[in-house]
Length: 124
Image 1 (cartoon, rainbow, N blue to C red):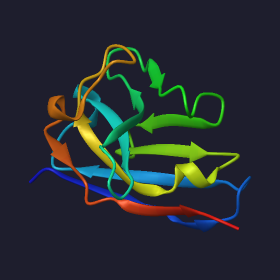
Image 2 (image 1 turned 180 degrees about the horizontal axis):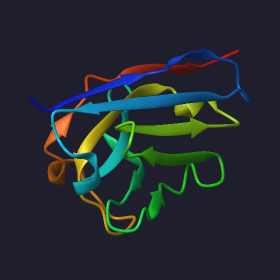
Image 3 (image 1 turned 135 degrees about the vertical axis):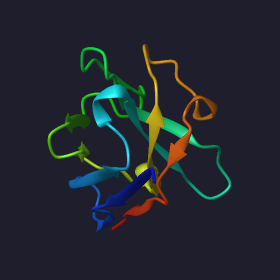
């Protein structure tokens, strides 16, 4: 059974940091790209970062470049998202998903398995 489970969310002040983790099971992580998306209330789901299965290339939304870093550990079946210098506009539910990405242009409908998400709240 394919399963993705996110952890590491929480509440932080602006400028703070969090590390999210996506634990994968039921499939071979090496064969897939993994992306982090986020969704705020009333907003569309937005791609935040993706790491390719081909060469570990990484792709980021412009809004998080230089602040967020995605990494994968295929041996541990995990994909992490390190988030630094968090801003109030980063507040959202963060979800990891399995699929494919080859550039900065990737979309939710090309990802076929999703976790339930973890809440990130940035406020003073």
